Structures are given as C-alpha cells and as structure tokens.
Length: 203
Image 1 (spheres, rainbow, N blue to C red):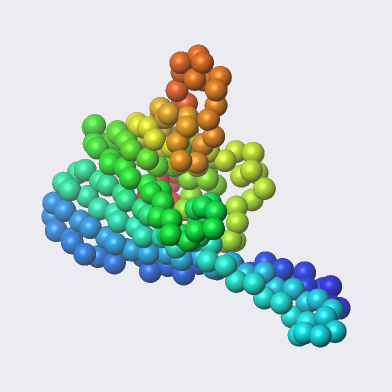
Image 2 (cartoon, rainbow, N blue to C red; image 1 turned 90 degrees about the vertical axis):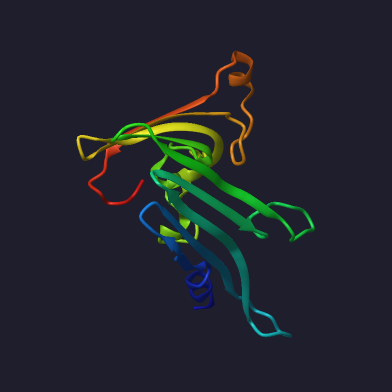
C-alpha cells in the first residue's frame, strides 16, 4: 500500500499564470506584461522509525517575466527567466534572457522574425510549457531538443490554413550545443517547418 501511495504522489506539478496584463492598447501600439510560475513537487512515503514517514519536496521550476507588444505592424517579444531555470552552481542570482525578438511584416502573408527565440523545429518544443498538461515534456523531447537560438526566420500563412517557416540560426545559441561539423563546413543551422493550422493558435 505504501508503494502504491508513493507512486501515486511521485510527480506533482502545476503552472500559475498571471499573463497579459494590458498596459497600452491603442490603434498603433500595444504592450502586455505578464508573469508565469511553475511549481514542481515530489512526494514519497518512506519507512522511518524516527521521523514522520511522508516526505514532500517542492521546487520552483519556472519563474518568468514576459513583455509582448507591437508598434504599428511591428511586433516584439521579451522574456526573462529568474533563478531556478539557470544551471549556476551554488548561486540563485541568475537572470537569463530567454526571448528577445522582433517580427517585421514583409507582405500581407509573410513576416520576418529576428533575434533569439525558439527554433521552429518540433511542435512540442515551440509550444510554451505553460500550455502543456504536465510539468515536463515527453521523452521524445530528449532526442529532438532544439530550444532557443539566435537567428532569423521567414514565416507566414498561405491559402488561409497552410502555415510555413524557414529559418537560419547560428547553431550555438542559448539552448543548442555547439556542432563542430557545420562550423567546419561553414554552414549555419537551417530549419524548415510547414503544416496545417486552422486558426487554432497564433503560431
């Protein structure tokens, strides 16, 4: 029974979003500021003759500040991560720059995004973790973890429901390990993605 209880409460996680508080909203400009936090807990029932049997360990998995907005048709995104997400030994003072990008219109259906943002590779990876059902991504994310990188991407909607993007990135950004073969060949990291999107979400 104790083993069942231990497994039942092995992983607990949920997100708390205070997102998109409107600061400015006029015809030609918009600014939304928001925050999100994700808590993660591990519970375990152990046999301890001295202390209480139940153990509960709580962690702050994410703490982020978001700034989203536009100026005329130019959009921008700025996101910081506070403390816990950065792997800094023996310190809790890290502030990491996650996203810093601008989105410029090229035509009615085509836009250019430049800066640091998620490489458009896997659907699960480019989806913000606050919209996922669990505290962690699935196991396939370990093999296809592209993360954030510095670069530029052309993206847009075609024939109403076809979404496509092609991007060129450094291949050695914030979340992407250095790949020495592309560096020796002198070629950057190129990502191409296309699919059907019936207005389910913005991206």
